[in-house]
Picture 1 (cartoon, rainbow, N blue to C red):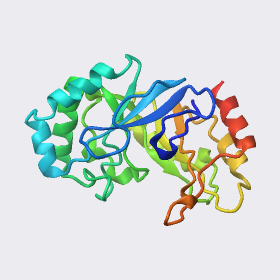
Picture 2 (cartoon, helix red, strand yellow):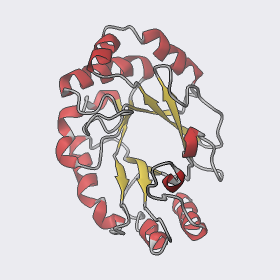
Picture 3 (cartoon, rainbow, N blue to C red):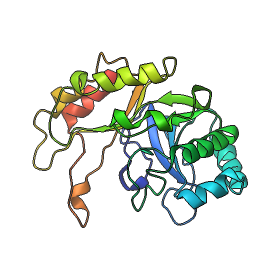
Picture 4 (cartoon, rainbow, N blue to C red):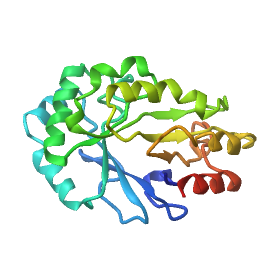
Length: 238
């Protein structure tokens, strides 16, 4: 498991980490357009920023050169997460969200023919997963994004049914949390114990979403770790 900062799409770890998240966009106009050297194994959040019409172009091989250029720049041990949370609704950045599953899977399989098997990462709502699963041969890791939004449900409880569902869907694939976070706006009371409950879930790894959304124009949760929580994460990673 690794400690990663993904604030401002920097991809720069606050401490030496096993896994470090970085964003790369397939299409122009988005932050994170290229791989940056990091101190840990890169988890590349490769996002197409394409809707259904763009996915048809993808399927018809019009992005093959761009995908090939990205592939050539990545280290051989990179884990590529392609167009995550596909089972959730579309929004301004998740333009592929809620796409008709057959089209999404055709796009995934075509990208995997170039990039190799990739990290499949839907939302935490397991009832919507299955139609979007592209097949085990196209997948390297499986997981989901999980945030507690301040509820402090122990992770042994919060992850149990979701991880079991993943094991039924892809029993031989390592399980990785693409985004993990516990919200705090005024304090971090209880977050250290919450993170410690990550142990014993059988996960291959997790990437913590260490970012302060409260400084944005529209204030939101503060997902940053305090020092005690950071120490716990390093112990879990050992």
